[in-house]
Length: 287
Image 1: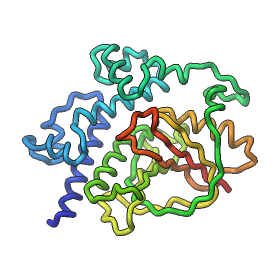
Image 2: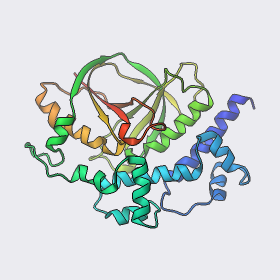
Image 3: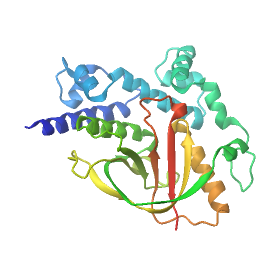
Image 4: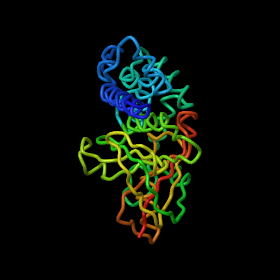
């Protein structure tokens, strides 16, 4: 087996571990269990994982749980204490410190971003006047782009684990240079399709000569006219931008949505910045 094949094999095995972790955030897991999932020696698994992922298993688990907690704060009726326990913290104070270190605000302040009463008409129940003021849309024409795609099936909010696998593969092959661009393509309506049947792709713009790993494929993101909204903040808050785009901007724009899926482009590196600075371009194809 040559060096490239070894990278692919390790990448696929670590990918299985990341997926296993993401699906069992509430279960007690040991390094020995995770090593078995990836078919690694339990004596060396933690070093291999850190070398491939750039972080420890504990750090990955903490990051995934905090991301889910951010979604819970916005979308669920659970109390902050319940969310803290679900995220694996023994006290609300410990959860608040950890959440604040990552999201730069307390859980209560983060939740208040969705708690304000709606102030617009047309029957919408999620947008506030502040939401409307913070967004704007630009119409841009894009060329088509071919990207390496790793399919994700299930809750869109869990696609982060699939991106972790994609970035780990790209890093091993030296594909994360300045020209690399990352995209998410979302094919189904989340309110109409069962969560476990939702289809999406985690994508990366890489050279056409890149050796795709098992399960990956090339896809074309359609070019043409798009309405573009840039959201700055945690990915858990992206629904606000989608609500604004579809419920506020599109009906009054004299535009009609095109026959292609929405895609997102991630404009900076979430691994090097706090969530408050993450920038996401939501791109809606237009006719």
